Figure 1: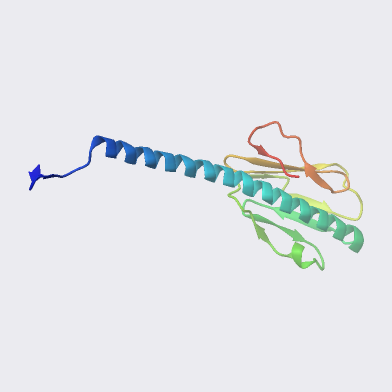
Figure 2: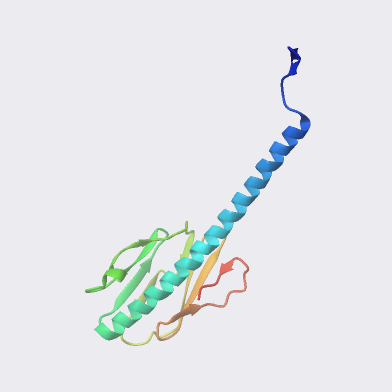
Length: 150
């Protein structure tokens, strides 16, 4: 319709340009969220490694066993006279769907067998291997969705 010589509406080029901009923005957002989950899971692995080292050291020096317990909502250490860093309960930084090895014992004596802790989200997995002395390290991971931790 023409009113006073002006046209109402958008041209086809304007509509196509708007749809293209929205599509590009949605793609960038999806990629950044996916990378963000992998990054958060990797950081969680580094935090767990540091806490496992601290727990093993505390158990050896103090002579008191510590237990690490995990579930889908988070994890905690249990034991007598824990240091503040170990005493507080922590929530996962990402939405966790599965936790393998939900309980680990840190004691003065070495572990009988090495253990692997695996935490999985919808898209990624984190695997940490603990040697017989309780020292964490990256576990072998052949799946491309597996996130390595140092």
